[in-house]
Image (cartoon, rainbow, N blue to C red; front, side, top):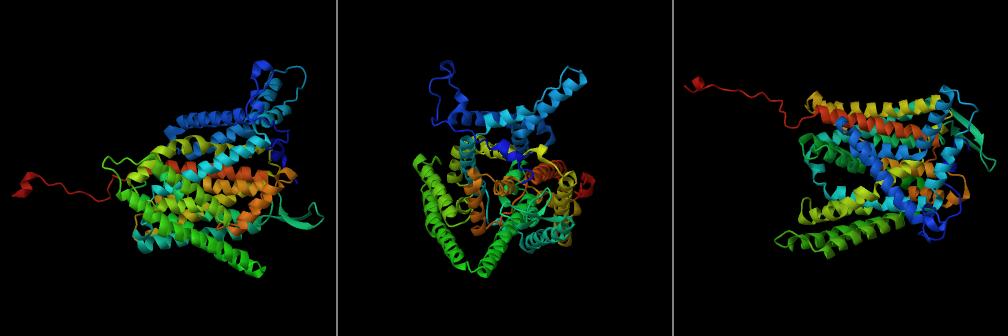
Length: 513
């Protein structure tokens, strides 16, 4: 399949070393980074250091950590050796050095050394666990009652942001040329050059129309706007959109499974998810409130209780995956049930946040950057067309948020800022694109992973993942970074929650007579 070069570089098929650690060190002729754990620790050090450096450089531009982490992951992927190869070639061309050396091997050697199959599997596993803990922490800091406080206004804005971008993007998807090509099995399949499966455009339209509340909560908290009037409204609307899309996709899965006579497994899956939610509501929630009431006067929680909560988080993640839901669904619901701003919430954040957010989560961005290879772009028009396609969706969502907000007597400036907040895109959407990209790897070493991704997507509350090609993924990465960076900068610069629109009348002493 065209465009799979990124995977030949990203996933090295070199034989893995059976030993996790080095046998004797470099002075005994052993390569420490030829083993799993030394290379894994190098991954953590490199991505964390690079992310902090990029964050320091972009801090004057009011950029959130999310944007800096994505850029860092991309720089440490195939982009770095590709830039180095081009720079060396340019140097030889400018200074007219004799001979024409080939620097194409730099990229291949770098990817083989940094991203072996065994290390990629470990990196993805740890990153997934860090991502699960991160969403749990965001949910712990979120008050779910916000969804009911904004009334009809939040509901109208949420429905408008769901429907309008999705409808417009589905119409625009007809401008992409569909070709019919034979696959490996001799069958004729539909494909869009530079994108992949035509249904991938529907998936992209759905993700552009979706606004996931953990992403909005994380960026607003970093901008210190989460507890403002507009921040609470944005969080409320994002919850409506997120839960609305989950319900819509669940109904679509039920209809599709019924059409293909596969409704019974879906019923079992739904019953398992309902049982998990019932357990969290009627067992976990009372237990959490009980231990909060028994909090010592000094407000410190015993480590044993915090550890027990974290074990339940892992158990809920495993149960969610078992029943076909997202691995993060159970932990997110758990976090929403923990009393906001309680001593337990503070204790969990203090003990978990540094490890989960500071060390584990950056590996997810390294994994995403590992798959970003701009040298795979073979269809520049489609590459730019896909970016314009997504930008159109974000623009429509911006207008779809403004229209009902202005209708409900919100000032135009605040309505525009709300539209910018609802266009925040984060790691949740990025990981869905990563899974969609992994699902098209043709080699046998990744076939089980592809089957797992498709199976999980069919049973989950998410979209049915469609295959996308590496150059489409690269275009998506560019748009995610650009849209989130621009929206974050504008919100930070234009929104001052302390500034009131009401004019204050000042009176002098003579008016007291």
